[in-house]
Image (cartoon, rainbow, N blue to C red; front, side, top):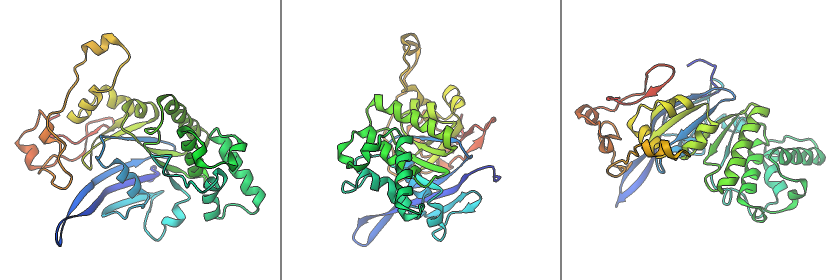
Length: 320
């Protein structure tokens, strides 16, 4: 990989020890060898069902969790415990739940101003207030909201406060961890459009984590599909939606509603058989084989690696 990338993730692993009995523990493999890269100003969508490790990828990438293995490079520099404090200005996160990610005892002004305080990004109280009001305006909040508390706002407004807080240090990269899943559908569109407007104005890059494929396709340049701690397919957003190759991606896309009754009648919904295996007791070989109709003996023996099938379309499957 060349330095054209802003963020490079190489073979990232995140294992959590889980007690299984007296003096016994085993590892839950939440993220198991994930690699991808994001260019400046680009949005990479990360999708997959609940529990596949999407959020853990985002948090480990920003070192909110200490990674078990692998490397994260930012602007060609490896992210470590020694330089993470300095890099916090460049990399920020918008959390999934706008209700629990904001301190109920702080006013909006203090919530948005906290990153400015931590990184000492102002020389006077007046400059601090100007910056906060500018950030509020940027995300569509009024100046009179500054003295209110988080509980006085709707979910959409709270998420805007969280976004303003992330933007306070003028980052180049933001991990958006399911930022619209807790919001009403009408508000979701507003927040997604706001993310796009901010990207145009500020040139910020996103890792956009979600399970709604329609939203991800709308906002992303490229999409990575995750299953049980591994990435099984990466491609450009339109390419992935029109020519999915991994059986798991095909089944995910078959569940996406299309507002055209004629197309809907002709489509076949692919319902996956069986249950998702436990990340504590992973099957040998390909993790998806227990639910895959194309599975062969080779799938049980060996785990497929991501391979380029042309035009930057990477797939990890032996049979597709």
